[in-house]
Amino acid sequence: MHTSTTYTLLASVGLLLGGCAYTEDALNHFDFNGTVRIPVEAVQVEMRDDDNETWTIDDPRAMGPIYMGVFPSVVDNLYDFSHPEIGPVTSDGQSGDAYPLGGNTVGRFEWGCYQQLICQTVTGRYSSYDDVLEFFRDEVRDPILDTNGQEVTSGIEYQEQCFEYKYATDDYEIAFIDDGQLDFALTSDGQYYEAETSIPHVPFYEGMTVWGWADMPSEGFGFTTCNSSIGESVYYYEEQYDVGSNFSDVLNFPGTYIDHGDYVENEGYVLTSTEDEFVLELGFRYED
Amino acid sequence: MKIERFASRSQIALVGTVLLGLSSCDRDGRDLLPPNNEDYPAVEEYGEVQILTSAQFDEFSAADDQVAWCAEEDDEGRPRCLFPMLSNPEAGVTGGATFTFEGTGSSVCVLADPEAVFWGLSIAPSGRVDRFSYPDNYNDDGDIDLFGGLSSYYTGSPGVELGDFKGFYTDSSGREIEIEYAECTQTGYLGQDDAHAGRGTVEYCDINTDEREGVHYTIVAQTFSVPLDDGLLSFGAMVVEGRCSQKAIDECTVLGESLDEDVNERSCSRALELAHCNNLNLEYCCANPEMCGEPDIDDDVCGDFDRDAFCGEHPYACCGD
Image: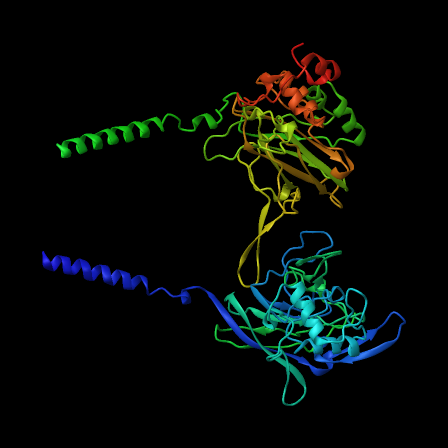
């Protein structure tokens, strides 16, 4: 009797331990780490104001989000730039869906606390409030104005505006200010801006391809991947507006969003193993 | 002695619990399941219909007998529109009707209106919506959901089994991806895709047949719920040229969709729809209480309602006179 009880107990413990043997490795989903590079000349952005005056920004803070996706393959016969393969065209006037397996960005649109900064500020580009003020004043030549039309000149005032409008109490809640390490750093040879990144939780199919592009600003410092009519809403006394966010289908229909001046990965990085670390070089400038 | 008394109380409690348990089994919810009507199919194919012109659409709206008006066929034997009648399907079967039309090369509006009229009872202790303070008769209401797309994408067997408009694309990785080819899409109040109107309510969608003149489209009117009173769901359905937004479509667009087993318009159902379209639900129910639900006996919503005066002013909303 004792013996059978002991066996039963041992079997139960064994079963319990067996149940703990499951790990998420059994899933066919993996995190892929990699590097994104963009040539230094990519951040030379031609600007034009209402008076038709032109100038060039040469500053990595001008970079919009870098969109990266994992696709079944990349082809070169759909657009004037390389592009993921697409499924059937089911709607008139719309490309077929690229059906990405996963994706991520390096930097994302994050509202810059003033209405004029809707779809203008990206995370991982600015180290301080003064950094933002200086960039828009000296590079974009569109100084940040407060609700009374007065130029904001103080980082403290800017911080206060952000705390007020975003219900924040500390800088770590203001995502577009990063006093740590910014997304991109200049490579030792001075040829590229480079960022470490990852694309999490992607189902693995051998031969699938990492591909992406950088949404670079237009002459008026606008970004095609940002939709100013969505995102959180501001209701503050007489102010009522949406703060903008990226379109939700940028990786489904990349060709719809890539426009003049954007930098595109040429061939894509083919993944042959779950251990592969991809390198994306956004070396092709698309000229419309 | 104490032990005996305790046992006695326990027994009483046990018996009481059993009795309570039994009494709670006096309803099994079957009254909420509509019966099957063996005289009518649960799945039916109605063939091809004409596409109504805007003038015909206006003519239909004004017709006294919309069922007869719709049954008129053209030279190719196509009816103007349809008033399908479907039985409640057996368990596990998706019921509904299918019909087809030919693409015109531009947008068409597809609409279906299931019997009859439904509203939620307003029971708010304050701020009650008086119009909806008299309960609807939910036993005479059904619900039909519209789907549609190119017939070549339709996966069902017309008249036998309902299908959908889903196809599959295999990418170069070997992934099989489901693609929705349905084109009769409706947007909800909150902007959500793939919405459908609710019980008793007309629903409609646009289908753009640009560059597909003469190409066949299939419309699926899928049974969502069948009236409890007869297990028979009747509804009006049609295809009209132009976009739905260019037409005034409401509960009174189709007035004759509430049909009995002999395909006759149910008594007083037209008055119900007209009253609903004129925001007279409460007055209609007070004038024709047999057509509405059972109000709470303590809730005298009709008050000193004067039926004669109301019917004199709104004769279209009164029956049995």
